[in-house]
Image 1 (tube, rainbow, N blue to C red):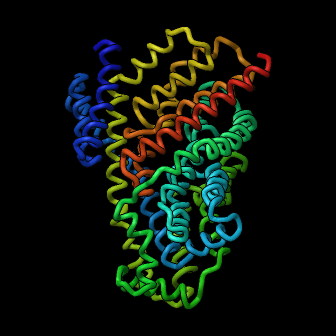
Image 2 (image 1 turned 120 degrees about the vertical axis):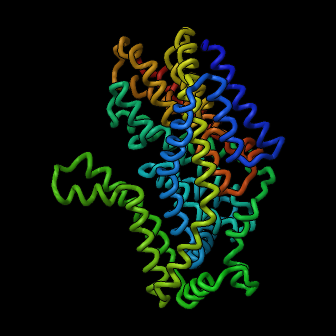
Image 3 (image 1 turned 180 degrees about the horizontal axis):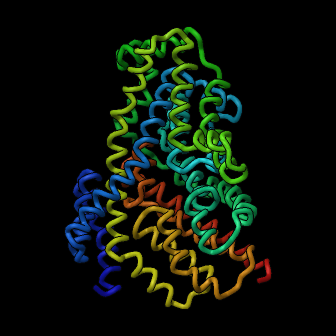
Length: 466
């Protein structure tokens, strides 16, 4: 099949997917699977390969996401029912004022997002988002979407995130140069994105019934309306008799972050030995979150006199609500893999590589198109690095300009997150917004942040002699 035909099929598949979800109101999970199968058949993918592409990629995506989402939901439920989210929300409102709470969350997300993967960071901070929504009466999206955009900015630009690490390795640039240039750039872009996108966040947002139930659960139960089950009621009563402090909640949020940071540093800086192995093990994301679940269970439940069976029931009740997020995310991964396996990404890359665009523009535009076409940031970054790597190698650029090229790719890799991106579904589902609202807010804000990053990279390229 010709590259032009592949490109047209890729563009058409995204259009059909949006039509099925927005116009026909088909469930995203079903729509993603239907379009994925349709793309595979139109591009002539063998049936055996189709089964592997859909089932294998869905399994690998869910294997990465499911355990993190499940453990994060357990932590979030215990923080929320104990009153911890409300304590932090009230503290932030007192310190920065209700109007600036979203900015406080954005700053928190920047710090958490440096060592923590995007999905993990969003899920870890979501209890605070729900607490803010309950405290202020505003929709969760007002707090959650700017926070998630900050997480994505850091995820796309900075090591130790996998896309940035892969690009640095492919181009032969040191992680130190990436951090030296990327960290201040990400900080400036975070602030500018927050300021420039505030009009977007003033639009009215809805909230899905299941997310609204999570936000309102503690309030309803406290008022005796019977919205919570008995274990949840006991958990909340324990928090009322012995109120949790902000320090305790900060600790249970910070512990997995510190474990992951320590594990990363130990893996890179320490010599082989027992201590290094223990630290690296504890720094694995699902291990760090699992340890934090046990810390939450003791600190917020058992230490306040609750029976282990009650705490266990509260933790287990967090799992059903995660099923739809996990399934939609897995289906998004399957659709993305079909697009990659069918050759759509290679067709786009080859077309742009022959366009004669300047290197920096080419790196940004190619990564952005691959990101829009197939979804995951990391895949788009790795694909672009593979296509442009040989050409960049022949230019003999210094480390600073290689780092700028890598950052331009990172800018393209975060742009226009939409329905074929797992991150889109995690953010929209956990914030309780519809697909249409997600496209009008989250997708546009990721594009604005990407353009700001590229503008910053272009400015540094212009003032630094090659």
